[in-house]
Image 1 (tube, rainbow, N blue to C red):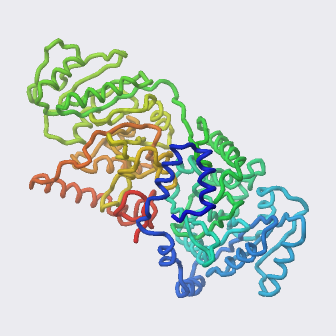
Image 2 (cartoon, rainbow, N blue to C red; image 1 turned 60 degrees about the vertical axis):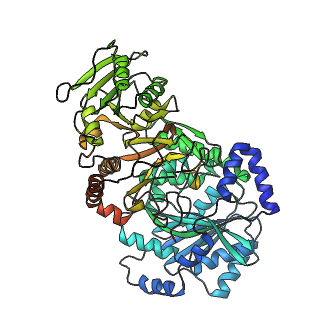
Image 3 (cartoon, helix red, strand yellow; image 1 turned 180 degrees about the horizontal axis):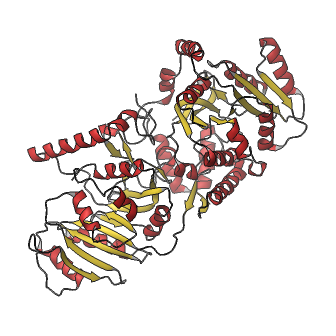
Length: 621
């Protein structure tokens, strides 16, 4: 990153708002070199002349060629930006479009530029209307929509640019998935340089992620909405100016039969001193409007939740309250490691939620210290001892100082993580199950309330937390299927306090899976899918479990507001025996066979432009 006076000025502004620690974390993010630099990557993968010519020919073969009306509210638009915006529309490889300009500029300058532009190019697809008053960006956009006659409405800012293949890719998705009613694409930013426009800060997005949308308006551009849906949603609302697009997107996604995503850079957001892209401080009112829009969205959806703004502008937290006092069963498999288990238990007992039980599933422990700790938990005063195999299924039970029951049940088979948890679940009385490794130490005292608030949402099936290694680097921030051929945790090694790609390590969003080292699931859902897959005794059982829950139509939520240390070694034991190698290979094959279609199609919550060899949202070469 080149240091310039302008960037120094931005850095000072950032420091004043966010404070020293956040500034240093952000600086680390900025100074880390890109694995694959975006500028050359963009030039390599953008649609070239031959591809655009192919698309223009292919347009005539599309079963459906919807008219796409591009709506642009204008206000004192500089002639250069206005002309370049219109050029980008006219350069589209898809020809069935119209450009609708609603101009609230007090003077006639913009209208004269448009009139001359159309006359010189003999362009008849551009409609222009000069508004009698400036109704704000929402009102001006609505005026532009009244000019439109297309089946689809696309929104474009007056100083931004469309990629030449943008409308073709939208039309292609409409043909491929005709039930789609809202479409968005990936985007980047462009800034003026002496060498021309420079492409930076690409935002490669997942497919529709409701929790991510409640954390940030990640959809933004390019946004295309079916005309009927836009009318049903009621258009844009001027009381949300500044976040009018966020409010509109929330209302449209509530109603849309299907939300589609084109994982390609189709929109170029121009960066200049007055743009929100470059200076978020220029529109502080917008973030208050976004908060209000999100709060109203929750009300329309019939969900309780408290919306607050995060320190990074445009990012929000929704805190879902717990309904009632549901009973939670915490399942902890254990073999020896009494000190590790004690630390885990002590962290649980600091929880601010009291209505839980703990079920420790004993599995072939040998150390006397382990059984002394069990006896302590059960108040046995030295009774008990090592359970005889095949004899006792319940070792003992006791009561914690807070009044919670603790049970120690015995699984006398060999190690099979799935079978052990399924066995422990048969003793559980809770409405919700927590799967917890014995080497977890909870940091967040309100972790159970946080998980319950999410898990009680009818659309949510599983909630997982943010886990750190003891050295305060990330161990887990969600799981992506397909990385390294199967699946992998996100952001391993990221320093605690850093937030990763578009803050994704620090905001709530949806993933295909989370780790079973610390997750919550409703009892009903656990039982409905048959618990953990016992064919996967060691590897990938949590990923498989999450995918099966997702297959039933539920969301998997990564909740970063549940934090814990995971004392798992960074260098886990090697698969260095024939038996281990064989078992590992069999489990990989089982997983791949069951989820082959997902692995081929790609994880919907991870953009296909990202590498499957990295776990940090790095571009693929």
